[in-house]
Image (cartoon, rainbow, N blue to C red; front, top):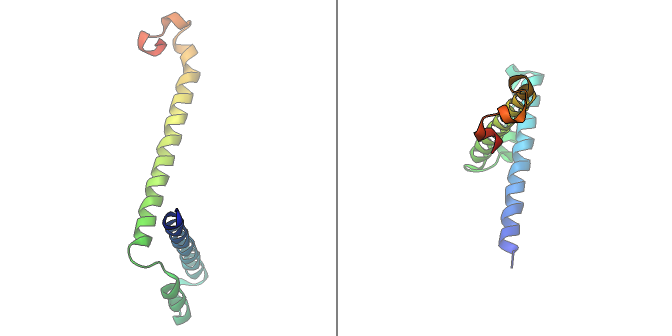
Length: 102
């Protein structure tokens, strides 16, 4: 019944694993000696890189997820700082603007 969904999930997870492995290999190559990229390294990258747009889609999704996390953290910090500052701005609850109290 859910075999198609499960197969799709497995395929997507395989793509993510592939991207992680390729990214790790690229980091190793660059860290070791970027000026001496050899044929074996290129063969490994070509054999293990995800096909089609899967790598691009993953990169975009990762970027969007990271941006979301950055904005979420910013808003959490902003609200937290504002809440800490509130007692200095308003001495009692009734002094708060009505829009804040409701």
